[in-house]
Length: 220
Image 1 (cartoon, rainbow, N blue to C red):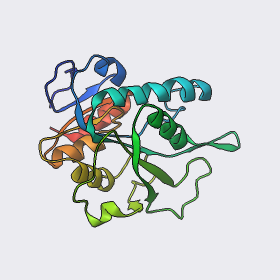
Image 2: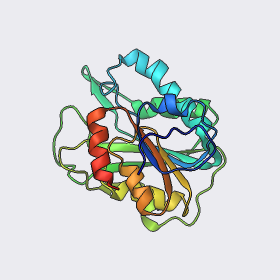
Image 3: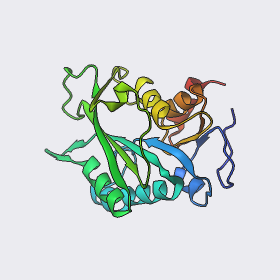
Image 4: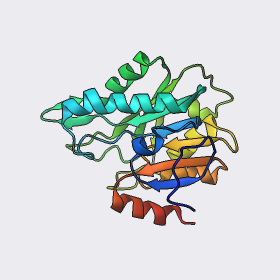
């Protein structure tokens, strides 16, 4: 596996890159068959709420809009944030920004943690899974993919997905050899699942510690 190539040419590649996705993808001509990601929380990138809402989220929407094929899908899996005695509805702001950019909301599911009974004063135990496209249509979905509520065995006390969720999405929305992008890849769960399913992949992680964990997790 390589760890230093940027995506500036219209050439598919399998890569997990340490660095900022905006910097690497700003001039990319590559179009992707699936973008599956979770936008970082404002606290993860040390950003004030107003800047996050009005600057960062629109920047993310523009990025994915420039990179996805018109008949393919962008899938966000987002958990809203409890902050200062209220809830910041991140998924609603993403929906509004994507609709304003010309996308349609093709489907909407809830992803539940299998340990939903556990109590967390700061994080909700469910996420919103948002499926956006310009012109795409779902084809031959598996029964589980048609459900409105998905359940995933999240690793205990870990801030990343188990492999069951991204595997389901990648398997149903892409074919062999197609290209999956996770611009906020974290430890690379989406990338590993794409690779294991015979898809091409590209992902970015800006946190040094998380990236090193991801390199070990993904292996050679």
